[in-house]
Image (cartoon, rainbow, N blue to C red; front, side):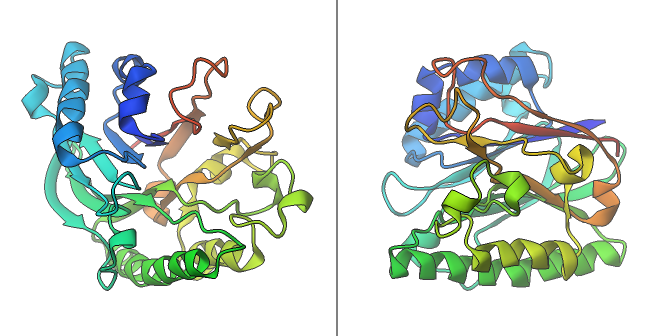
Length: 285
């Protein structure tokens, strides 16, 4: 059994000040995908080193150096940034999506091929899709360009898995609530970025045409939520007025091994270390 976690950090430096290391020591997922780390490399490295020490202290790795660390910093200062920690063996790392070379697209996609102790190979991607803004044509164009490019890579991952190669799971903040079950106020957000019909149609294609599985929804069934992000405004967190925009999309063989998930919502607003809650899924591979 392995655990893969994903969490939008909302700035890893701020998350550290708010207690993310306590969460790390308590959970130590086998693979931990992070998005929106928003830190330059020289400040990110010591934070990841500290988290590696937490893994070692918890007995998950023999020492901090044994925890694999990969990341990609966004070339736009203070924006995006993705990272991954893995207690599993990492055999290859790939940065970014081929064909996207604008600064605003950096720090949004990183892949690692990992191997379980039993020899099962998985491609894990940490993904941070553009948020977009329905009132800003440029930002929406950036988002759709990224989503279009994703389709090419998803097709390649699907084909490799279907031929008996590595299975794959895409983990991250996709900034799209797929259906009204994934957002508290569907009607009020129908014209807002993150719930536009054109955006949601991409998720339809991922599930239908590209054969990926929304693992959380597959496990949870047709319930409302469970949400992973709550606006900082008003009392959205306290009233659970949220969005489910953090996902793990897995190829079918891997998805079939999923045994359970946890969305680790903080007990109080003040106890949060991000405006997103971590999503962890257990796979019996």
